[in-house]
Amino acid sequence: ALDMPEMLWKNYIDFEIEEGEGDNVRALFERLLEKTGHVKVWISFAQFEGTEVGKGVATARDTFQRAHDQMKEAGLKEERVLLLDAWRVFEKAKGDAESLAKVDAMLPRRVKRKRMRTDENGAELGWEEYFDYHFPDDGDSNAGNLKILEMAAKWKQAQQAQDSSSSSEDESDDED
Image (cartoon, rainbow, N blue to C red; front, side, top):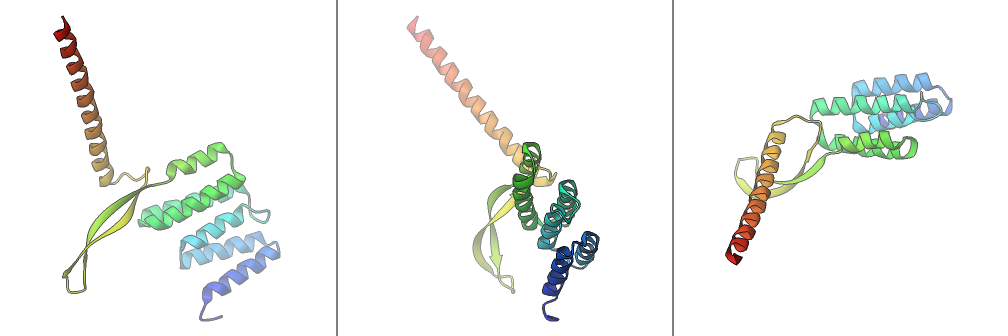
């Protein structure tokens, strides 16, 4: 058990839940989060708060939000995706349409990117594709680039619409 401390923590938390000791469970989760801050611990903590032993759905939402804020601050994109997926499942089970829509609005857009792979000596090994996540509430520099691309696409559509309308006017002039 000493070489797997996470199992010890889990068993202790499960024991306290069985005993109905919500305050002890909460204190254990807070202590564990000080040591690790792992996304699975946050998800378990929030799910616990949504049970009869926990403080209820509102506290569970607050816990999910705390976890999301910490992971956002730390720049942990994949962990945020896992957390938001778990939060979404929680809201489907215990929430209403409004709370589910709030979580859905926080979900990221998945973007495929390429980067050059290098070995430990710095030699190039070739390109690899990977997925990056763009969260709507992140005000990073990539958002500006995406806005420019969106604006360029709108401009192109407007140009095409203008060209098609001017070509139809030319045809009507020819008929006179």
